Image 1: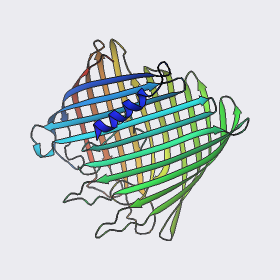
Image 2: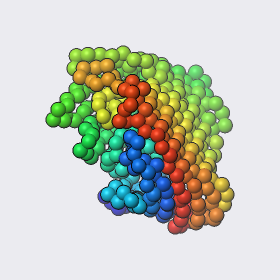
Image 3: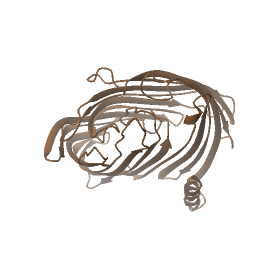
Image 4: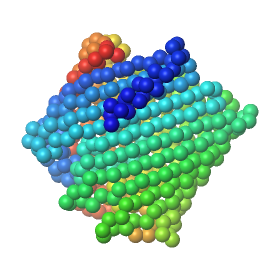
Length: 389
């Protein structure tokens, strides 16, 4: 599957006329030795040493009005003692942005993963996070959004989103597979070239797989919010929204506040910063039905093109409470995840990094919970950029 996807992307990139777009293939191979603080993910767990090897097969296509990035990452992890947990993982991440004018923009984001590893990645820092007992997870998200200039100062926003979360069954935990579909439509008025304000309506439909002893009805959520954007200068953009959500399931409803604020800084290609906070209704933690998710996140990267220091930090904190709807078990969980790397790029080809992860999760309403966990993982990573890119 991975070779077919990579071949399709390379073929599509090659279609562009000469000079119309720059296509760069950036393959790399990495090897790391690490200590996994809790191979069981939740509970008191057990730590173990491991070795991991992975490849990043990345393609960038940059044109006058668009940019496409694609990465396929196969990986294999081998444990020293818990050999029964050795696993092979896959991740595919694609992003595309086209901006033919200042007032018209289209963005596509797709990621699909199969992994035994849970936690923050660079492409999902802003998503609600809850650690569950170790299992193989299959996650997919596809999102298409855009803005169209309708009149001299009017903008129309639109978005369509599909998400799927599936889990391999285990003898000790019942996981609830879920899928969701969302659509958004909005209008904004350009107060100036640097700021806008308007209204947006979003509809989410959450669907849950039936289990032999568990039935969770579908949930439909409608969210109306006042939203806007502002340019803060020097490559920094602000987006915000505040409103209310109405969730319904099997004849019962719940109203909850909804808000978001995000800050993005793209002052240079070598240094990026994304941060934000949000409260919204989501599909849930994977053990149970829908949840009201409130949290904040930050992601920072600094790269060195030829030689020098590079670093990355991704962190999030989420408080997730089960919706008060029909046949919905109550419960709360709070999750903090901090991942950081720091290293040195020796030349175009070779780099060495130290990485560390800290996880803290607990359920304040349930006393001692099987979801509680607290541990740290760390390791040393060697990276070889095969083509010197």
